[in-house]
Image 1 (cartoon, rainbow, N blue to C red):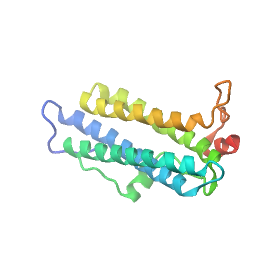
Image 2: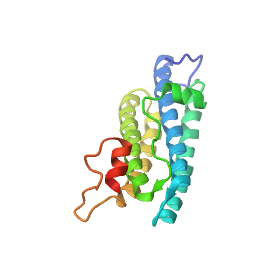
Image 3: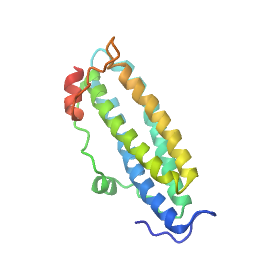
Image 4: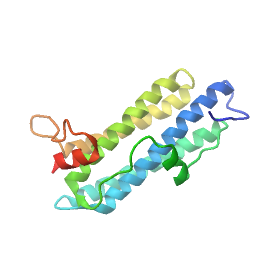
Length: 181
């Protein structure tokens, strides 16, 4: 648990420490997401290359903004955000993105899995911080809404005429990438 010496008025130190710990994990997840999105941006190929390539840059920029917001919220609460690559790798609970240079549709299938993980975790943490700090809750809710929209952009490429996803039932990024092809 984070140890802080002060926090914002109206928030107990113990509650602030819990929120800082939650936010540190969100910081790692968002840093990983923005790096993964940029990786895909550089490694996407095929007929839909330019559409996907250009779709990802605004997502990268927005997620980088989320990273900054989370880090600054940690500092505001009296914590010390740790955004180093070593800390991210040491503390993350997910595998590294496994798809290299590949077709746009394969990357989109894999990114759908990535977004599902990030959004699910964001929603879980929203529930946890809701009782502790409504300001942090509000920030995470806004981020989750944007992340959900970005996933919809991804899923629009994976959706069949009947509304199902061609990756439905896939397990993991590699499985989703294979199913999307």
